[in-house]
Length: 467
Image 1 (cartoon, rainbow, N blue to C red):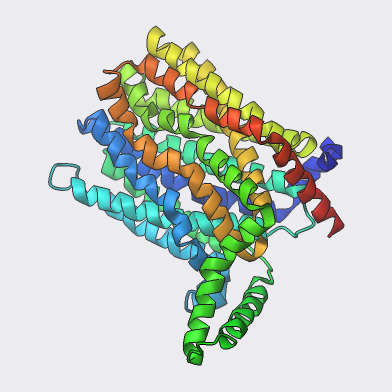
Image 2: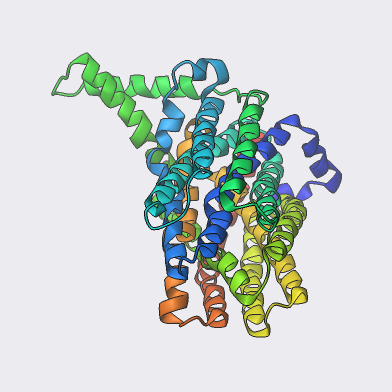
């Protein structure tokens, strides 16, 4: 393949680009909200005595990540008054979303979990989820737009920086609240005050990040003119202001979908959507119950912080760059195959822990394999989805594809606690075996469509080199 000739030296030269540092920081901004309403929230709910089923259902707020494609066209088209002229289209949306996350996180610090306030906590968590899911639309589009169209070889490097940034926010920074929770006198609401400070720092960085240069608005204006011309030539003439509204809606809603299916073909586009949906369902079920599992098996908050947060983050960051190098040299599709097999093996390691008990050596082995899995799968998937996006609609396209991948991680995985409690009657070992089996359909599907995916990958690199 064309991209297999990239040397190791050439690959690491990419990271001297200051734009990739911003991709890393924005990756932190993307991953950190998962701490606020994910691992920390699960631990808080567990300590307050909520059932596994309730904790699992509480994770339904992550459904916002699965449906954010519904409002993603607005991130491409809507200009936020005053802020867009000051910060730019991408940065203005990132700034506003982080401000909402900050206010909701600060509010969480003044809420006590009980039957009366549980609904308030759920609403605040939902607000954070919606703001974060919207922020992700802008951040993913930023990562695509900040690179020139002919900078093909930097796509995997940008994916590695985004992945390592996400895990820095989710795991490295996410370890701090677990250490704090073990300090006498520190309650979970106090922890949320500290987390709000971190969000404030992320807001401050937005002002130092460069805004991507894009001809997106020019393309949208041309498309609107074409829509208006077709509407004027229609036998049923409409007032000009209605034509303008319909043209804006056509470019905002219809054109991104038409562009995606036109670029890839209907059959291939549907196949890609199906694979993306299936790929990480098993991992999602494991992730949703992992904190509950660790605490029930007998690991302490500090053990969880050290292994699942710090350990996973460091390993994921290391493997992210190795996975990115592999993808750069041998192709993204091969990287997806490797990460899928590792994903199933990683889940079986947790089944072993469920049988053997809280042995730190097994915990460490599982975290090493899980870190490899997380890194390679995320880097490969981020680069793969980025490759499929039309830059004129980068926010809409990436959100559409990523939301399908998040669907299993959010809506479906919300029933993970129900499976453990009601179906398996607390049998954690069988639960993790089941999550490993869930990986198989996506690998079969990937094998079936592999030839077409290789063609798409080759066409992408050739097209960019010709540009």
